[in-house]
Image (tube, rainbow, N blue to C red; front, side, top):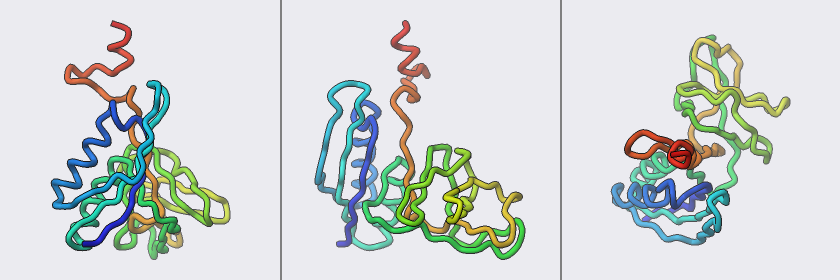
Length: 178
């Protein structure tokens, strides 16, 4: 068995992030142990969970971690983001990270830097000296840009509860006003 710890932060209970994360782990033939769980006492207070995820092999673990990452989990390791230089305009290096529509941060020189703008299906270009990370569509990538590759050193912030919709398609804010 191989394992890694992940952190989840946000409205984990009422938005079902925690239960969905556990389902992802078990469905991927993995196992988990909750190391730490702090539940927010009021609706506005976020919760925190640190979970050790185990799987039979590295491939299974990577598959599980990839799905958890998409839910906003970040691997506990403090690795810097990995970057590779774009060799030509409009050409991305193998293994480049594809952005989601969620707030994302990259770890550069021991600091978490927000990726702006928040945009889906882009590459992330990093300018370490300027402490800047930019979501770039393929056509905006220029030769020499440092492009994020892999998933290390990347943190995705999960959707807040008020943005989630119930089965009728109403947000919580809309349900409260009814």
